[in-house]
Image 1 (tube, rainbow, N blue to C red):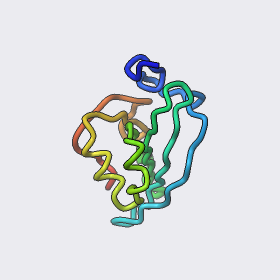
Image 2: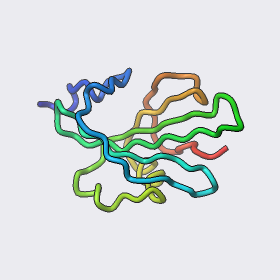
Image 3: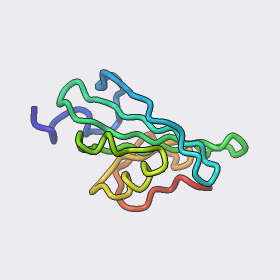
Length: 114
């Protein structure tokens, strides 16, 4: 399947497009405790890195970032380097209560800290 035409590359993100989600770990950098996972698209076989964080003390602080990851890079991903990896992508999707959106396309800066 042509990756550009796959459902996984269109908003809103439909979690039923993914057949697996593997937990990488928790990023404790700066006390953020962000959850890092790798997902696999059942339609085009692409892999996606996902970063989710929210700060319990602050309302509307939830945010997530997800982007396509090269299969060869999966073994190199750690919770601590995941934000930098997402930042380095040509583009990614982001959303959550912090951004007041169910999803937008972005690139560059990844705003995970308060």
